[in-house]
Amino acid sequence: MNRQELVNLIKERQSYLCVGLDTDLQKIPKHLLSHADPVFAFNKAIIDATKDLCVAYKINTAFYESMGIRGWESLQRTIEYIPSGIFTIADAKRGDIGNTSTQYAKTFFDTYNFDSVTVAPYMGRDSVEPFLQFPEKWAIMLGLTSNEGSRDFQLQQFGDEFLFEKVLKAGMQWGTPDNLMFVVGATQSSQLGYIRKLVPDHFFLVPGVGAQGGSLEEISRQAMNKDCGLLVNASRAIIYAGNGEDFAEEARKVAKQYQLEMASYLSQIAVGTL
Image (cartoon, rainbow, N blue to C red; front, side, top):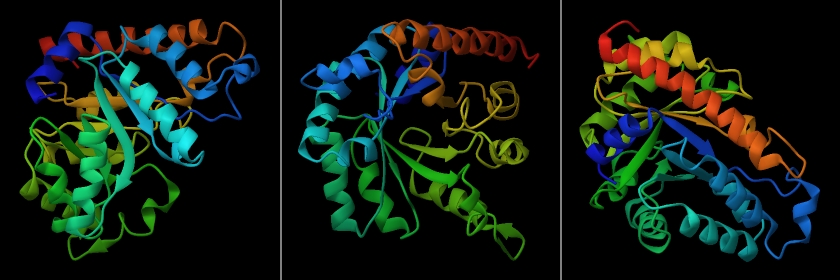
């Protein structure tokens, strides 16, 4: 999916919601465990319930890799079931020397046909660039994350800059707003406005809304740009909203609340009042 298609989808659906399919076999409703593939049965129901309210699905591969071949099979069924025209994210946080990153990129772009993959930039330019060589595919580079450990490196100051600033500036030299996004955690609200000024045109993938306590209003006010420029991810708050046989309906209710709130912010940005 190219940038204009993503922007058009956001405008059409009045949503910049990304639903995280971080599906944990220990947390899904018990009645699904009798299915041949319980993880896919759960994902299928969540997708059916939310596919008209969101613009993206994010699959955290750790929840699938941990189950071995069965997990990879669930992942493949899930990515094949997501309707075409919805942006897909492999949340794999890959990054290695060039030839290895090339194989990771082939895995997620060619074998599984994701639109994007999250990448860790610690090893530098040659670990990221292979992900930027695929037409209409995206690398989503870690920028400033929500976890407590972000203080260990990302928020360390070097001269007059934090490390995350150096990372963001380097990334803008490697990719473009058409093939590179940045992960910026929702709980880093004090930095969001500054980061948007530093990175005016690139999309941000913003995890941490809902269960982690990030404010959708604050994110939108601080970090929207003229194209919206945001994919705001909610995982547990949506997919585990219910744990009975009506779990999908409960997930839809929460997703609809997010979509309606997002629509209000999109209308405000359109008239310059946000």
